[in-house]
Amino acid sequence: MNLFIVFFNVALAMLAAPLMWGITYRVKAWFAGRHGPPLLQLYYDIAKLMRRGCVYSRTTTPIFKIAPAVCLGSVLVALILMPGAGISSWFGFKGDLILLIYLLGIGRFFMVLAALDTGSPFEGMGAAREIQFAAFIEPSFILVMAVVGTSGGGLSLSSLFGGTGYHNIASTILAAGAMMMIYLVENARIPFDDPDTHLELTMIHEVMILDHSGPDLALMHYASSLKVWLYGMLVVMIALPTIGLFPFWLYWCALLVGISLVAVITGIIESAMARFALLDIPHILLGIFGMALLSLAFLLYR
Image 1 (spheres, rainbow, N blue to C red):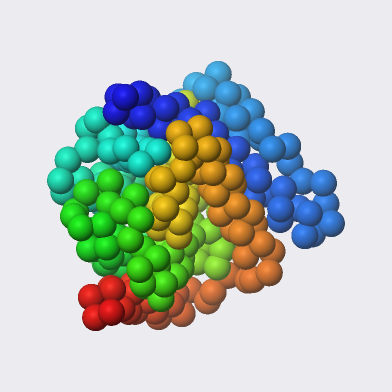
Image 2: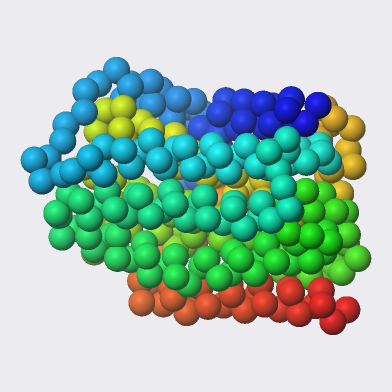
């Protein structure tokens, strides 16, 4: 049964993850009074890129070539660790929360290495900003995971289904809010980053993959969509810790609806807000850390 949970978790993510981008962009288009791209646009883009060839600069090394596979592989392994329907993953263990954090960090590390490997100062600037934001947001992510582990009674991802989150409403709301903000930061969304911008002084995530092409770029886009799904899962599981008590198929339906709702909220936020000024973003990220710290304080001193 646990092995089936792993298979279903990964299969559902691989099939449905690119759809979340489509939902977000359709919501943004609706707010702007436009029809917007098809819901399946990212599927079309990935299929088109897979049929093309890759172009490599003479300055790049093998690191640039393996980075897309590492980025995709790290997210897939992280998904393998995720529980489902109230049941721990077959590959789960005590302390897999820590491994999840490191796996996501490895993906970022290789993306930054690939950007620096091109020798382009433009991509180096984006990589430097990515690392700066990571230095601010990763402590917040660790704190939110500490709240999850403490409320569930262990450092395992199965504690996401502890069902104890509602014993302290304030802690649950703050943890879910902080994770939603982390979701926006990690997925390069407004108000922290704009994946659609092409202004040299404001690009962060997108500038790091400018030299990727063909299947490599397809893998990068696919890895990004899987990250959206993974962080969306964490938002839903933290905001609704009792989801693990749902019947088996109802759980999967609720998870799909919940992640789709997160994508809708993302579209609403991007339609209603402008991007923060670049120099103000570190202060906002420190505020997210404060939210996570306050959530842990409420949980420990309830």
